[in-house]
Structures are given as C-alpha cells and as structure tokens.
Image (cartoon, rainbow, N blue to C red):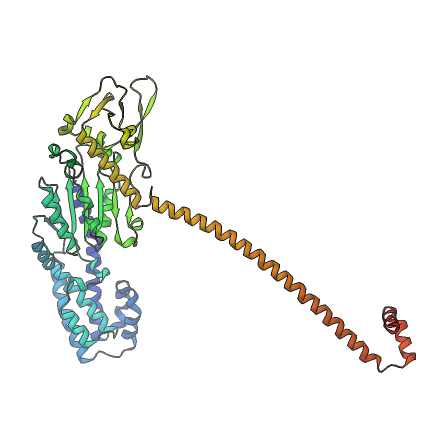
Length: 498
C-alpha cells in the first residue's frame, strides 16, 4: 500500500510541477517585456499564465505609461530571483517531501517552513511583477508585505502550486501517544498531508472488560473531526478504484489533511473490513459547507442507508436454499488470528440462543440470559461471542449509526424537521387557498359595485345629453326625431306622463 500511495503522490505532483515552472517562466516574460518595451510581443506567451490579470496587464503593456525608476528597480530585483531559481530548477525540479513521523511536531513545522521557502520566494516575486505592471502596487504597504512574505501569505492558487509535504506513519503499539501527537500536528494549521497506514487491529485490553469498547480498537481516522478545519479521509483497500481518487482529493486541498488507510492480508479481508463496518469509508471536507451533513460523505460504503450489509449465502441446514447473512464487526474479527479465542462453537442452539442481529434488536431488559451467535467459517457454523467482543461489536454498530445520523440518515431531528416542514407547507397551502378564495370574493364584490356605478353614471350622462339636445328642438322637429327613434319616443312619452 505504501508504494501505491507514493505513486499517487508523485503522479499528482507531475502536473503541478509543470504549472509551477510555467508560472515562473510567465513572470520572467512579463517582467522582461515590461522593462525592454517588448511587452506587446510577449502577451501571447503570458496570457494562459495570468488568467483574469491578463487584461489589465495587457492594457499597461500596450499603452503605457513606461515604468518609473522605482518600478524598474523592483522588477529587476524580482527578475534576478526568478532567473536564479529557473536555472536551478531546470536541472532539479522541486519534489514532494516525505517524512516518517517521529512525534516531534515543532521540528516538522520548521522543516516545512524551510521546504516551502523557495516556492514562496518564486511565487511572491511573480506576484510583485504582476502588481507593478498592473499598477496595483502600493509602495509602503506592499514593500512590507513582500519583505516578510511567508507561506501563510500565499493565495490558495499559489499554495496549490507547491509540492506536498507528506508525513506518514504506521499504526504503532503505543497508539495512545501516537494519537495525541498526530492531533497536535494537525492542530498546527500547517498543510501537512498525514498518512496513517494500518494493517492490523490492536487488541491488547481484553482483561479490562467493558473498557475494550474504547481501548481495544482505536481509529485514528476520526482524529481530524475534532478540529473542524482538517480534511479527513478513511480508506480501506476494499474500495477498488476509489483509493487513488480519494488520495488525490487530500493532496489537492490546501488544508491539513489526514488519510487513514487500512489494508488487510488479502482482498477478501479488505472487502469484509468495508462491508462489516469495521473500517467504513468516510470523507470529511470542511470546504463543502457549514453543516456536518454537507461536509461528511459516506457514499462509497455498501448499503450506506442500512445498518448492515446483507449477503445471500447457502443455508447450511436446508440444502438448495439460501439465507440472508448480515455482516457485523464480529464477522470481521472472526478472520483475525489472535481473536480466535473470543469465539466458542455452538453445536446445538438452545431456546436462549439467537443470532447477533436478533440480539441487538431486543430491548436491553430482554437481552438478559440470551446468548448471541454468528454464522461464520467455511462451512458456515454457529459461533458464540465473548462478552468483550460483543461489546466491541455493539460499539462499532453504534459508531456506524452515529455516522449515518451526521449525514442525515436515521436522524430523528432531521426527520422531525422534515415532517414539520411538510405539515407547515400543507398548512400554508391551505391558508393560501382560503385567503385566495376570500380575496377573489372581495374582488368580485368590488367589481360588481364598480360595474353598477358605471352603469348609473352612463345612464345619467346619456340622459343629460338627451335633455340638452331637446332644449333646441321645436315640437315639429321633436316629433320628426321621435318618429325616427321609436324607442326614444316611448321613453320620452313615458317620462312626460310621469
């Protein structure tokens, strides 16, 4: 596994190394063109290297004004630095730093600072040239910035051009001290890429009874979750085709990263470690959002929404039939050589014997006197679990359930909120419907009133106009008009009678 991880690290850096050299050469071309007046001729060369900065840089290069003496001096000094590193890197390109973890966090921080210093010097001088050409350089403020430039002042884009600093370690016997040292290292905020290789599970605390649930099987992959600013990946070699991609994600982030990798003795053990939730896949990326459900990803686990992965296996008691076999941590532990003494073969099950999953489904007061067993081995046989292993298996089941709730699966609070949201939405829709009906009725009533007023006003205007016209007619003319308008005649005669 170590060789595979190293291959991914160097493959990742090959592409970034080209980008770093291109950035350096682009800075050289920009500075030289600015000083010697050949700026427009180098624009085609620098365009892909400066992105959104290209337009303001091109404007200055095409139209001036020419560099001032102070600008010329600063650009010349920056060019000397870039030329020196270009000459050196043409023979030996920077490469990733790989360090075996020795628990000295202070020494590692100093080593990181010395390792990244050349990249800081190069990238800061390229930035200085860009600011000077683009007339964005504030003399007093930026002189102080570049005089004290360190890796913390690099932008995310600039930091991504630096080779990774990888700290690796095996899972140690003294894992408690190791966990504390790793936590302290990640808490420094330095973008270390910490890789923990684990090829076994460390059971040495059986004599401490229930303490085994917390002592016997430490999982260093969860350390970073307590920091909230670290990128964390828990991998199992059983994730075929995913390990390289997940390692790339850890290398590409500018945050401190912790990668915990388990590889068993063979492919079958790796697949069982993943399926039994002994080493579940998990990725925590703080850049994905503020909520746990946004940052945490369990998607590469089999049957991610279920408590167990269930396999169809031949039924050992009924020839030709199959049965469902839920995989638990106990099934994984059954394949670990130094845990064989935690199982006792069950020849004939009694009335108080039941499968492990059936046992977990009982209420606590109903478990008294019950003996849980698992189907395991080749051929399948019943095996009773020790109290210590039972406690450890239950702890693993609870851990998986906790992870599920963090991403929103089986989360009672999220479900209640969702249900409340549905009720609220339905109530709002009903309220909106009632309010809409009332508004429609009110509008109809107002429309009828306005229509009636319009009719009355039209009749009044028509009557006034007719009355006004009648004042100017004599009797004979009026009769002639009435004969032409029989309806009006009837109307006026009726008015006359009244």
